[in-house]
Length: 171
Image 1 (tube, rainbow, N blue to C red):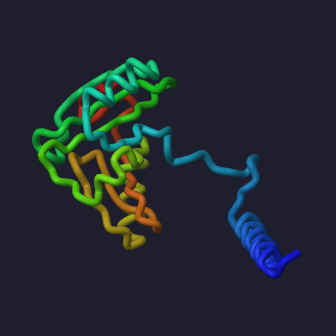
Image 2: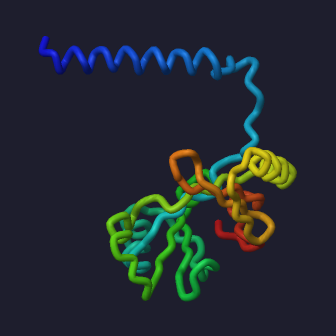
């Protein structure tokens, strides 16, 4: 075994030891685990450089029906559109016409944010908990909280039911 392989093995053992420590400290046995605060994934939002091309790919090629096409409230002229990916789940897209995304263009098709649907009372409780924890929040339309996870992924907690967005049915 080369020295390089020995280092990889040592690191693998250390990584597994760390995972075991975390499991021992945080993993709650199934019979004692509380129910989740979330009721499901509302939608995952990606970026599209061409709305019609995206519709042709996801609806015509993959068979995911387009369920709604509305203006994106965050950027006038931009579209926010949704595909039914089954079981009450949506895959959503934004486009940003006329916006020079520059280097950001390299991530077209990449993740924009993950929206997680929660009951309104639990949404309010989570807003309080996040605020008390010092997490920077942006609240929108009295039903959406936007924030970043520790690695910078953008998350949204949305109090709207699955298949609805700001009073409109998107599924």
